[in-house]
Image (cartoon, rainbow, N blue to C red; front, top):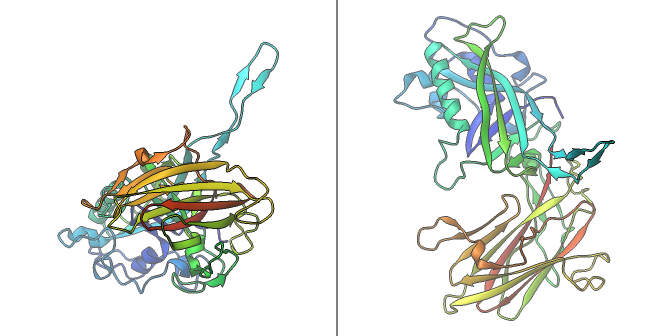
Length: 395
């Protein structure tokens, strides 16, 4: 991996793309100040810092490309060229509380703190008006104010370092059939090119900044160093690529489906992800003639590699879900949320009340080097189930 932070997206809005900005700097489109400067050579297609994974160009100008910040009614927006991030710091999230005693002290259990991410880079523009516009746009983008319908205002996606392979966003990929559905053939898992190198964070907000400082040798109207700090309430970074033990499995009345999910080997993932994972389970009630379905979800650690497993008869996690006709419910371990898609408003709403479980709710996480058998059984109308396994870590 190269030591570069080339891409950051907040709330569905691209905030920083080093390839895009370098292309704009090469031609300085819309620059009326009379100045002319060249992009850092490392970011051009022949440079050491060029990253094909985020190159969806050709990039011509903010106006012609409809850059994320461009507004036709604001001419100065065409003279802001974006940000090239060059550093990121992820602060440790694990701590042990220490209680001081008269002689020595007592060390408490490990606990997770919020995930703190600090970024820094150069913000580029063609003139003072473009720079001022860019600063205002950046503050709003980091606050999630440009979130469009269907996005979440507190989600972050980043590419911390460009992959060594020169993969375009939709290139590459391979298949692996390591996942099997009990009694059913599973579709091969598809790994989509560069997607596996991106990381997601949830419940993210701006904690500090943006702070602007002078760059030696650059006019303030052309380039300024910008630094900002984000904090994620969910203390992990998640792989943007999800593995699907079973997808769209129809479960009729009185039937069940099981799948073995594993972190025992990440050889299928060339990024070398070796930590644990969590799950996202989505259930949809398909039968309009059945008023309500009762779905039971169990997760049991498997020591024999079987699913259902015979060695540990008692599940370590179980809960039931009440689903009415046409409803879609999601139990999401990444955001620590249970939401229901309202059939009328088509909006996701909190739905913890639809679950029956032992307090507190145990999320379906999978520890490192572990195999878990997940079973979904149904009483009522036909239910469609999709289970995703999402690797997570802190880098």
